[in-house]
Amino acid sequence: MDAPSSDQPGLIVDVQSAYRSFGHVHALRDLTIRVPQGSITVLLGPNGAGKTTAIRMITGALGPDAGTARVFGLDPTSRDGEEVRRRCGVVSAKPSLYDRLSGWDNLRYSAELYGLGRGDSATSAIRSAASKFAIEHALDQEVGGYSTGMKTRLALARSILHDPELLLLDEPTSGLDPESALAVLDLIRDMTSEGRTVLMCTHLLLEAEGLADEVVIMQHGTSLEGGRPSALAEKYLPTKRVRISTTMEGHLTALPGLPGVISADIQGRTAMAEVRSLDAVPDIINRLVNNGAMITAVSPFVPNLEDIYFAIRRSKGSSIDELAPPEDSTARPARTRSTETVL
Image 1 (cartoon, helix red, strand yellow):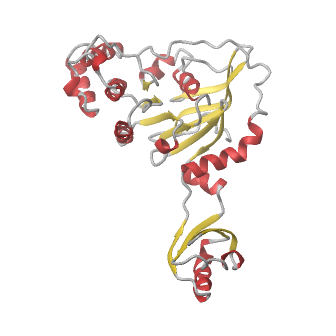
Image 2 (cartoon, one colour; image 1 turned 90 degrees about the vertical axis):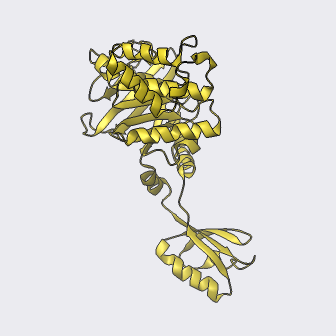
Image 3 (spheres, helix red, strand yellow; image 1 turned 180 degrees about the horizontal axis):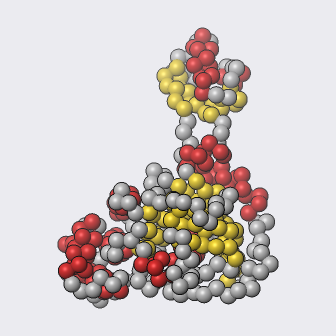
C-alpha cells in the first residue's frame, strides 16, 4: 500500500512501513494500516498473518523496530501512551476475565482502572454498557458460569465503560456459535453509529463481508493492500462480468464469439461472461435472442470480499517473500508492555 502522510487528517490509526521481529522471526514487515475516523476497518488474513501483533503495536504494548505507529496522532510507545490507551477500548482474542467474580464486580474493577471510581458515574457506566450488550440479567452471576458468548459480551461491555473513541477487537467472535457471532457483529456495527471507530481482526471472510468499511489484507506480517472493498474490486477485478441464464442447454453456445464478449464460462443453462463494458450487454442479449435463445435472467456479477481477497493475494503473491526487514530493524530493542493492562 502507498503510505500516506503521517499527519493525514481524518486518520485515527496511521501505521507506516512498520517492522517488528522476535529474534529471527519477522512478525511484521513493511506494514501499513490506515484507519479513517468513524469507520469499521478490518484486518483480514490467515492465522499467523501478524494481525494480533499489529494490534499490540497500536496499543503501545510493542514498539516497531522500524517505521512508525501513530494513534490519534500520538506515539503509543512514548509518554503519550497512557493518553492513547485511555482513548481506546480493547477486546483481545482471549480476554482476561475474573471467573470467580461476578459480572458486576468484573465491570466495577475495570471501571476503577479506567479512573471512573466507585460512585454514581461508574454505576451508570456499568449499567449502560451491560444493557447495550444484553448481559444485565447475569451481572450477579460468577463469570466462570458464563457461556463463551456471554463472556464475549462482558468483554465488549468492559471495553466501552470509559466511552473510548477507538475500539480494537481481536477475533471478537472466536469460539462463538453462528447465532452468537452474528449478534456480536451487529453490536459492533451499532457502535460506529455512535461515532466510534473500530479496528477489528478476523480470518473469516464472511465476518468481514458487509461489515467492513475498509479492509487491510495481511499475509506474512505485511499489508498486501488496503482500502474500501468497492475500490479494491475496481482495481483488482476491473473486468465486467455478467451472468446469463436460459431455459435450455445449448442456447448459449454462440456467446463466446459475440462482439463485446471477452470470454464465457458456460455451465448448462447458465453462463458467466466477461464483457468489455456493461453497455454492451443489451446488444449481446439481443444477438442471443435472435439466435433462438430464451433468456430467463441477466444480472451483473458483483464481486464479493472473497473474490477481492483472492484476487489481491494472486496479484501480490510473488512479491510477499521478497520483503526483508531493513538492515537496522533489530538494532533498537522496542519497549514492550502487557496488552492486558486494562483490557
